[in-house]
Image (tube, rainbow, N blue to C red; front, side):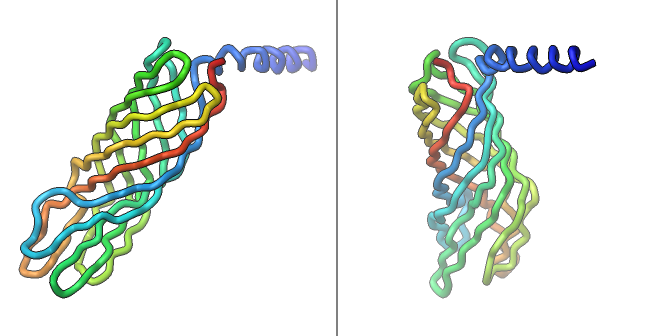
Length: 195
């Protein structure tokens, strides 16, 4: 029994280098610059709100340049709503799942990416406005970045919301069709990098 256990452990350790050529594990974090897009309501303006994102990802390689990268991030998004009489921050925090298809040079370097993103609301913080933030947020994302051979990288991504943020009542029964619009700038680091 000990011989079998030792053999399995040795086989697992020997297979890690081969398996690691097909995937990378990574951590990332950075700044969100978010706003709302969609129809406006009279004199109410939506201005940029600065937030954050952080989390982990797996990059699964399919050949020399193509990969799929699912991520799990915590992301704060929203906007500053301003009228002639008041200013309010509309901020929601989501657990997001971007699934990005990436094209990158074989040994790292510049890359482009695109794919869907799904968000689940974790919390919201809105004052002064009657609102009901929806629990789910669907979006499309596209970006560009640089990933060095040693694992360090930087990226920028635009995320265009497809679903309505929520029911925002400014009074009079008016409910604008606001959708999230976010620019993310990230720093990230990966392990199991190709040499």
